Length: 296
Ligand code: GUN
Image (cartoon, rainbow, N blue to C red):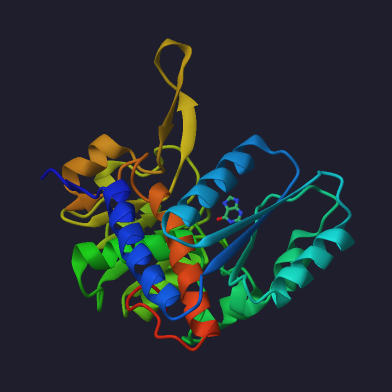
């Protein structure tokens, strides 16, 4: 079998088009969704993310506010800024780019963000609401994976899903989202015994461990859907580097029914889902009908 390649770039572009239409509807009702992004310090990768977020926010018709603070900003100043954004009615989503410099307590910062504006879905209250099946803002990357899985498979009810990785940002929320869609969920991780045998049971594999090409094709059940969240830079030809996922793409694609490539799979969905979360937060804050199928 040769797997269908799930084109995350095209999927994310369609999602952004849909969001732009919904933003126009919300604007017609008198509200412009606004996203505030806070960046502390000059981490080059973070600067690229923040620039891309700002550009895509504007492209779908939302308001983008960026706060760039020096690396030596005191924690108290950052908390004060977040306090102001929390009470600013033009701001519906707040994201503090991670990592923050070592002298700042990231957990304290995340907990300071208003739960209703927490478009990263990292606040413990949103984590708890997702866990208990209530309306929540959920982390963008696993939300993107869920939307791709629903698009590919329709109902996930009763399917065997194996999530490899137990991070707070991907693995754990992914497991909760799959459970919410009535899949039978196993969370595997670095200590799981005979990981290959566990993964072979899965109709759905979500790999989020951050280890290059760790999942070989002979772990994949024929016809399974494979979502590869990994983005790992490894040495390539002629002294250059290349990006690979957590799955060995060529061998997995021979067995799977469908698979996301790296790059061009899950990656582009993350910012699109950040925009979806901002729109959802804006609709909920203003008592407007929220778009269907973009949130839990
Ligand atoms: N740094 C890398 N990815 C992310 C993300 O999704 N959210 C935040 N806040 N910081 C990040």
